[in-house]
Length: 480
Image (cartoon, rainbow, N blue to C red; front, top):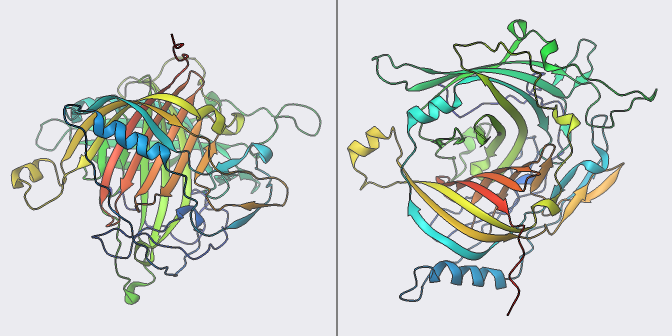
C-alpha cells in the first residue's frame, strides 16, 4: 500500500511539471501556542519557494479562548462567539514580500489572480453540532470505482499561473492533459469485503499555447484535439497506486475524501539530517452530483523542523464518471469537460456575501485512554464525525494581485489561488498557528463545495471539514 508521503528530487522531471524555478523567500516568523513546542508552522507558508532554505525565526506566544454560554440557550455560545468575532478588527500580519510577476508564454495576463484570505463570519447558527454516523468503507469504495475521463493542469503556487506539465515532440511546453482513470475495489486476500482501492491513470498531454486567447496570429482559433482523438490504451501511465484504510484518509459516502499524513514532523532541528526535508502529498477530492469530481493535489515540503513550508506544486484534475470498471465505455458521446486553459477564472466577488453552510467535520481521537480494540479496528486513528449548519458571511479579501508585464506585486498576505473552472486552492496559517490546506469548487448555480484539512502546532492532524455552501439569493424581510 502506497504511503501519502512523497519524496521529491530537486532535479526537474518532465512528467511532474517542476519546470520553473521559484525565487527564494524571506525568513519565516513562527507561531506558538501555550502548551506546545516553540518549533511550529511559519506565519506565511506561501512565502516559501521550491528551493530549500534553512532559516529559523522567532516564536510568538498566543493566548487562549474561554467559552461561556447563557443557561437555557443551547445556541448562545455559538452566536455570542460569532458576535465577538464580527467585532474584531482584521489583523494585518507579517513582513512585506514583493514578487516580480512576468507574463510568461503560458500566462493568463490580467486573468491570473492571487489574493489574501476571505474571512467567514457566522451570522446565525441554524444547527449546533450533532454526531453523524461514520460513512461505510464499502459505500465509499463503490462510489469511487469505475472508469473516469478527465482533464488536468498544474499551476504555480506563487502566482497561480499555468505551468508546463510536459514537453512535446519538438521540445515545446505543453500545458493541458487528458486523463483516463481505472479505479476498482480489490478484494481482500482472506476473501472478505474489499479493503483496498486500486487506481491506474493514463494520460496524454497537449496545448503548446498555454492559457491565453484562442486567436492565433493569423486570426484563426487555436483548436485543441478532442479527448476521443487519442488512444489511451497506448498512452503513458501517469500514476498507479493503492488506497486503503490508511490513518490519514477521511472519506465520505458520496466519494469525496481528504488524504494526507496524520503527523507532520515538527520540533527541534537535527543538524545531522539538515539535508532531509519531509515532503508530502495532500490529495483532496470534491464530488458534484455523484458523477463529476474535482481532485486537487498539493505537494508540500516541510523543512527546518517544520518551520519552513515550501509549496512545491499544485495539480488540479476534473473527472467525469463514464462506466463501471467491468463494462468498458461504449458510448460515442464527447467528453463534456473543457481543458483548464479554455476556462475562465472565478473572481473573489462571486464568493463574497451571505451563504448557507452545511458542514460535516471529522476529528481524530488521540490519547492513551483510547481502547486498544477500537484502535486496532480503526487501523490507527478513529474519527468522530459531526455536522452543523449556519448562515455565514464571507468578506472580500484584503489584498488581490493580477500579474501583468513586469509588474512588482506585494505578496504580503497572498494566500488564495484563483484557478480556472471555479477552482480555489489555499494554504495558510492562522493566528492560532493552525495550518489549513483547503480547496474549493464554485459553480455558477451559486453552490460552493469546500474541503479543508487542519494541522495543529504540534504537527498532528486536527480536523477535516467538508462543506456545502449555497449562496443566499433571497432578500431580508422588510421591517413592519
